[in-house]
Length: 465
Image 1: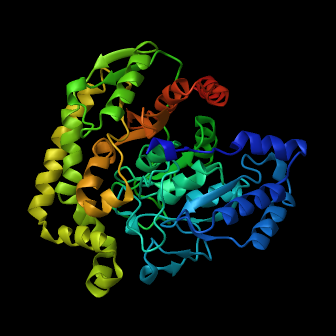
Image 2: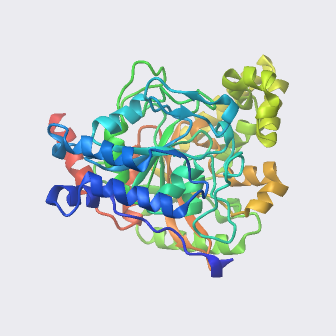
Image 3: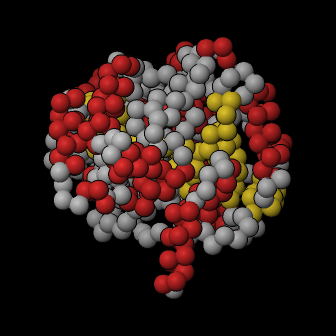
C-alpha cells in the first residue's frame, strides 16, 4: 500500500494568497483561474458535486477585485468550497441524494460571512449521503479516495471538503461534524480538521443530521488558516437556538495534556498505527505537562450515539423522505435511518439521563487537564473493506470521535505524517466547551506554527477587560 501513497499536496495558504493579491504578483482572477484549471485537470474524482463554471468563476473573482475596499478584506479573493449539505443561494443542495435536492434561496449565514469577507465561492463538495457516515463511500456519485492512494477511503461525511484541501485546489473548505465527519476525513487525507465548540458557528442553512449535535467545521492546510477562517465565521446568530459566544483566548500559560493509559487505546489490530501514535506521545511528553486520564466515560458516551436514540433524531429531518422515497436512499443510509424507528420516548429519556451522568464524570476530569490527546482514527480501511463491512468499519472509524459533541467538546485533527507502511496518521486534540483557542494553541505548537495573530487578539481582549 505504501508504495502507491503520496499524501497531500497542500496549495498556497490563505496568508500566501492574500500576500500575492496585495503585492500584485497575483490577483483574485489569477487565483480563480488556477483553481479552475486544477479541478478540471483532476476530472470527476469524487471531490466536487458541482462547481462554478470557469468563466463565471473568473467573473466572480473580477467582481471581488472591483468591490470598494476589497483589498482590506480578510479573505480578499481566497477560494473556498462548501459541503453540499450547506445552502448557497441559487445552488442546488443535494446531500448526495439527487431526489432530495432543492435550490437554496438563501446562503447559510456562516458562509455569507466568508463571502462578505471577500472569499470566492468555488463549488459544493461531496459527502456521505445525508451526512450519515464517516467513510465517504455512501454516495451515488463517484466514490472519492484518499490522497494517500492504495484505494484507501477518503473518510466522511465531509469527504470532498478534505480532498479539495489535500489536493491543493483550495486553502480551506467548510465542512460539518456531528460524529466526526470533519475530523475523520481530515485524518485520512493529512490535513487539519477543526470542529469548534457547538454554537460558535451558526448552523442556520445547514440541513441537519442531528440538529442538537451538528457543527459546521473547517478543513485547512494549517492552523493559521483555521484561525483566519474561524475569526470570520464565528459569531452569535439569534436564529440558531444553540448559538453562543466564543470563550477566552489562550493566555499563554502551560497547557496540561491528558493522555489515556496505553492499555485503553484501541487500534483494531493495526500495529503500524499504534506504533506511530505512541511515537507521537513520546514527543508530546517532552514538550508539555502530561496527566493520565481514563477514556472510559468518553467512550461510554460515544457508544450512545449509534447504539442509542440519537439515531432517531435524523428522522426529524429525513423521516418523511424515508417513508415516501425509500428507494432514493443509499441502502446503508436507509438501514441506519430505519433503525431510528425502533426507539421510544422512554429510551430517549433513559439515554439523556445516562449521558448527563457521563458529562458529570467527564467534567471532573477537565479539572485536571486542558486538552485530551487521542488518535483521530485507530486504523484505516480500503473502499472494498468498507463495502464488505459498512457498519463495523464506520463504528471503528468513529471510536475516538463519536463522543465529542455529546459531551460538548471541541476537537482538532492534527496531521502527524505517515505510518511505517505509508498510511496517514493523525492525532486528535479535544477540549472542553469554549476552550477552542487553547486547543488550537497546542495544535499549532505540535505543528511548529507560530500564532502571532492569535497572540495579538488575546492581548487585545485582555486590554479590554
